[in-house]
Image (cartoon, rainbow, N blue to C red; front, top):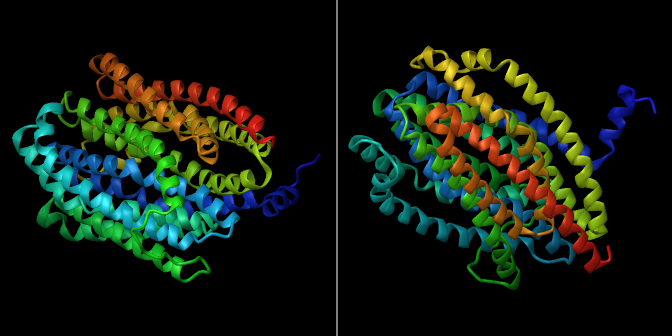
Length: 448
């Protein structure tokens, strides 16, 4: 069959999944592209020193705490809303209960984090006394982010379940613009504390945009209550394992930063700046495709069964593998000039460019297995097979911790990045085995 541009366009335009993937990716390039400018401005405005180490460590703790719940809530909302809609339930009441319960839970978690951080920092890090005090002040400023991040994740999952992908995709652009405006206005007055206030103001702006999108579409608005319906109990039960899995995954990031603090000053910042570059291709590839396939796969699974899910997964793995290889080759070849272009200005020390480039390359070595694992993760989420995801996260942490300790003393910060890539290979092997096994079990039980 001859694939002309017109034929390719028609195949994309009249395939709901392909069209949603392309358009959502485009919206995400617009929305998240602005967000990826933030670390470049931070590097120029604040450079690499102990203050930025404290900033990134404190923000890493907030991201870790929110990351335990926010992605789990966002991803698990989609198949549950699909199931509720398939039997003519009330998704608005379900989402309203999620907002109330998650808000209360995150407020308690924020309080525990603020009160418990100071004694723990002395045990797991080697920051000096002033840096520890700075981390505690930054945590106090950013703690409300825990509630905001989970609420925006609930609303994002709700919109994605209705295939309103554009609103969640562009919302990060508004967040980033508010971030930068607040940081620029206050940076000369309060230093890195301006970053904490900027992050908080940006997330509030994102939350308001998502609420506006829901109330201006045909989506049932949230109906707030604290009741535990059978649907909510089932959601909490299934989400528990995914929450534990994400806690383990984000704990890995905290461990990496804590172990980097054992190395020379600035290592935490180097790791953070490199990882932010790694997130650019990772986010742009995953934000469109993985959001769309989870929504479509959930609908198809409840309509057509497991066999369609298996075919969809195989197609997605082939597509993601081909694109990922091209992405990795491109960024590895151009790593040094891209790092120089992104960071080499203002307060950033040009001598750090080779090190940041090397760390980024070591992260990129795990890009392909990371992307394939992400495809298989959506398959497990569609099946609500979250126990496997929890066990996988534990494997990642164990492998990463061992490899960190073995490699960091010889390679410094690049050794920590290489450990992440090695852990991704173990994750891929585990998820592949269980997806192939468990989908056959489901097919035998359901006959679909």
